[in-house]
Image (cartoon, rainbow over the protein chains, first blue to last red):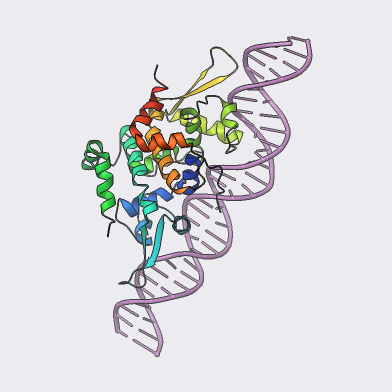
Length: 134
Length: 134
DNA sequence: AAGTATAACTTGCATTATGCAAGTTATACA
DNA sequence: TGTATAACTTGCATAATGCAAGTTATACTT
């Protein structure tokens, strides 16, 4: 169940850490969609199954990319959140978005987001990041 | 053997296209390491197996990310090359490199590359791209 | 206090993908 | 004509994923 590090090539390292079909989608939900709960991740369009979700959440936590804690208000819920290490993947994800906008003629990316991305990549990255400050 | 598109979320689209453990490594070899032949890909540190390599090459070709043609000089060899669509993944890969440099204490990224990346990301991207012009 | 609901997982099992070794086909060079 | 090499393909064991059902720990309701 554990992926071995194949080499210390930086691209390989990144892929070994989060380069599967689901990890970045969970992170997308956390960072771009403001989700933070198990049930919210489950409800995403791509239909992740419960065992895979649980597995990816624990891997991402072990990798230091997200944190897990009890909701202080609703004590039976768990809250997940991205760490700095996770938030540092915002530029990676925005580049993925930029590429997909260009090559997926049916992209579901909102017009406004596309405009912001094209006009000021770094500004958009900062703006998204700033939602997690404090 | 085919991954279904799960949604038209741009991140999901990108992952469905090249988001497995090997596709980007092949593209890395093509773009960053100047490789273009089957045997060269096979020789990489990560030890891809022959069936997976053949599968990924044909998927990447089907996706329009690489091309395949006979070597006009050595007629028994095949030459693979990135298309514009493939070269447009340079920024994605450079962001992966940037992240891995930051979080992999044992990264194998050359010092010079790190310096260039930190000093002028877009310039480095252009420089790599320009090697494929003409 | 007992019963019901809900959130966050686990478990079991079928299906699919991957890894490894060996085999095949088509040049090309000796 | 024979041998080497490049680019695959095939068969099979192992590992990862998908799906449905089950479990555990709160919390809310009566």
